[in-house]
Length: 267
Image (tube, rainbow, N blue to C red; front, side, top):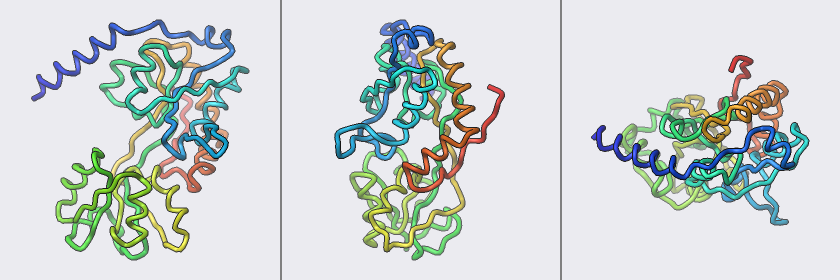
């Protein structure tokens, strides 16, 4: 199995390496007057089109702030989740946002900055559930809600095999199901779900203070583009230290980041 996975990964790396275009250095980005930023246009409140058909959200605020530190404009390029790495490799964007989690596989193809934000896998539920730890949801009396095709479905079934599972189509549907009483809790990267709880103000929502694990999401840059990556690391340290990242997250999500990034001057 390991050999098969390795061969598939090697083939992907080989194919994408053949498509590599020369990335723009920091100086070239500045001289162009524009930094091309990949964002997911269907991922509220990270980024999505608002009522005036303009992109808005956490990633948009971060992208505009990065551009302003360079005294240039931000050009936001719609980039679905599966396109984030290919768009960097082919030089269609200079940097990628869109909740880009660091992974060993991706690190073979692109470079990462220090973390921009986290994703905390934990539990979103209501006052009807008295559990204090996520393992307490492993009961036939509990119905968990998740999205069809989500990687977390198999993970949750493995960790909480006694619980029932209700599968729906979208993040909004999962929150709606719990609000309507068709489900009891959501076990997921809860930061991305909490914004939808605003649609049900009469429900007493709560998250368990018992995270399952934390992923670190960074800004992606083209492999070897050290001038741009190093600059972004300095900017991110300043944005974390000043509170800009956390304030932007609070503005977008209406709640603090589950696991805020601790600024570290050594990178």
